[in-house]
Amino acid sequence: MKEHVRTLLRTSSLEDAELAKEHLEFLVKESNQPETTRLYRTICRWWKEIEVLIVTGATTGKVEANNTSIKHIKRTGRGFVNSTNYTNRNMLRSAAPTAVNFPLQ
Image (cartoon, rainbow, N blue to C red; front, side, top):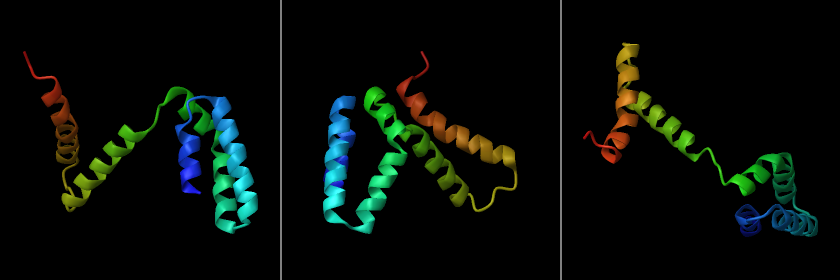
């Protein structure tokens, strides 16, 4: 089932995505399993967002990666007392890759 979902997400046009969704619906009905039915309902609920992904290729991957980094800093800080230090540490962590890619001239 997950291979069919991956195929649906890798399509390059809305027409192909719609065909893949119909094929997935057929497979879900044939399997008659609660897990696959729930998965298909979730895909239907998120269909507008999936269409945006297919058309634009835009994801929230970078934002999610930044949020994970911030959470990691907070965990390893073991309770920052000074919020300025916490903010500075987050800014330094996110600025370091940028500084490497765009050095001062």
